[in-house]
Length: 211
Image (cartoon, rainbow, N blue to C red; front, side, top):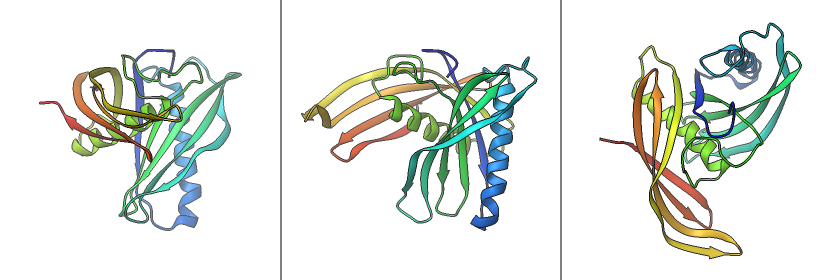
């Protein structure tokens, strides 16, 4: 993110994959180009005045988590850009569908504080990242073919506080709550209602377009 508690801009890239060995290098080259372009975009919060930027480092931050149908799954990497001598970090979230299609979201990140999106969400940083990635993927999938390919999360509101909460060893092991997240779809606000459920295995959520 560009600063604490501000709208978050997300770039989503779709990659059709087939042969893994050959596609890995091509995918890395594509992501590198997209991250650098994102960093140079004023609309995305980048700095177009800098004329010298390069990928300084990449690191796996969340290992591959398999989905219900192989080869489906998701993982996250952190890509660091050297922007005219300043290090700028981006989270690159990969979401592989069962048919092999690979969706990628690129999100500007910061280690400052717990907030990634503006508003009063009670989701932690990891859950906020997951919500951003899957929500933007869903919205782009629902508008397949549209020219607009950029989404911004402009606000997150807590609608219903946690109910049925249970705590064990200092962490929630049961509970549900509801939030409303607002996307900016190339100037048009789009709102989603998100239902979160926490269990001992972690937190899951489902999103539906607000009528």
